[in-house]
Length: 297
Image 1 (spheres, helix red, strand yellow):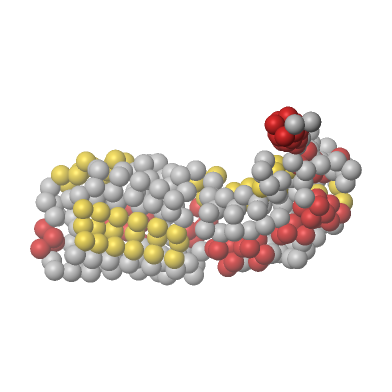
Image 2 (cartoon, rainbow, N blue to C red):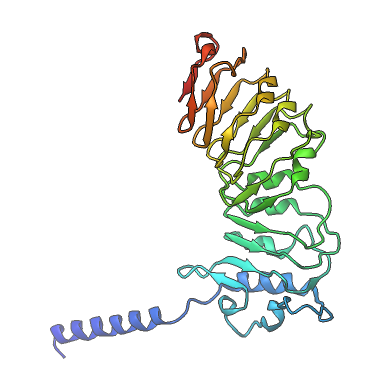
């Protein structure tokens, strides 16, 4: 066989191998499959549940098959790493251990464990190590105790659903930042908040808070920072808001607010103000104050 024909033959063989290998599904790495099976083996399946909404996804998990094909599991098409795990309503019952093998799935982006029974287990601080998470749902799964501070390390996490009004009534709440979560719906209390005396920072910009600013905001007299920009808020600003005499940062921009503000904002400590992209009219008399260094309208 000539050199030219040999080269063509080798090229043909290489291309055939490439096409053949690319047509095969990427197998789930052994460590990923083992982590999933170990996690599943720590629970029992509650087959007594009568609701038709339950879906025991892990029943058919089997080491002899590619874990990327298992119900509730989605893998990265290139690496085979598990990136999504949906075990909602899977009738899992038992203790959720703080060192669960689930935390070995370090590339998880979406994790849904809702509607299971973890028997009053604590929420493990190791959830904070899943740094790629954008979605996390632990609702209705019988977790108990405090949310660990490590959850705040999940910088990519998007919160969605409806924020319970009770969050605003936490008596020792000092700072609340839920900004940048447009899928989160917030409904403000219309009565005085239990956190009125302690809350100094409230940032819920870019969440869905459609409606008017309630007069209950006027009780938040300790507030130094209030950011409620891009929240689909409408209507006029309630007069009790003038009680917020400790305000240093006030961001109300990119809403649908309207009305006169000529004699309204008289905040001597104000340093930053944003009112842009609303429908206000009137003049801001306090802008002659030297303290107010940053503002836009």
